[in-house]
Length: 329
Image (cartoon, rainbow, N blue to C red; front, side):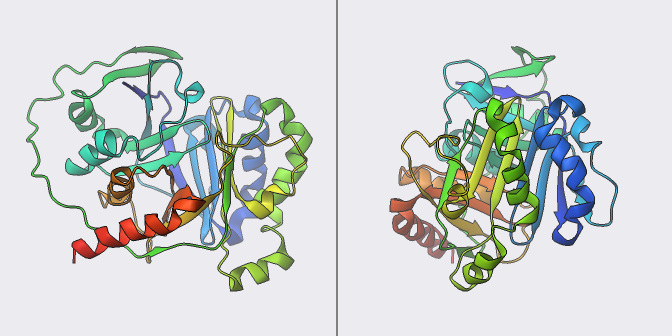
């Protein structure tokens, strides 16, 4: 197995809902006119609380300075596990539960905080740039470490990264944050970039203006639905996460289906904003799912985390996580 360290230097930011209009022009350029921005890594996720942006340095220049824009105090690097070689975004998705024991848990054991972004194509593990030596030390025994430099994949220089590191004492990771499961069902999908212009107006409406349909929105809040939409354009590949209701707004045969055509249920992690310094949150969720052999997408946002699991598995997922929660009390 190969672990690719991508060359993008990333910022993670939050845009307050009431400030989204100030940023809309730049965000539209990033989503629909990447050739005008030189941006290669862009992700926008709307939650009930805010918009979370993950963007590279070129893309970050498109965002205006504003009191509504909060930026996490770090530069982040994206890691990607690739099975059998090939480029990161063209490989089959590994799934966060498939890398729970080989990547997520060891990083948590070494007190390395991660920020996850699962897409239709693959899974990105974001780590702080300053943590990279410890990341490389932690994972070098399990993976062939490669860095992407100017678009070329080369062997990562691991010399000296083991000096001075102490093997951590492994500790249990009980779930300590509240869990909730909205009533929406979600689709993880994609579309051909060549068809993007034909649905650009619709996507802009979904991303910035409709709020998922204001009339339906009032009903949705009462029935346990939440607003969640994620758009990623990373190295030319588009990924979309939206609820089933939103997918019906798209023309037939535009959106790809997942390999199994599944609908996904969400588990939201956190009662209060989680912050960026606590380690092991992703591991607390992904390890029990890996033990139960339940696949999952995982999307971290500025304030909360979100796991997507197959609809038919939601009860066993909640059971597995509740068990892990209770064992730590």
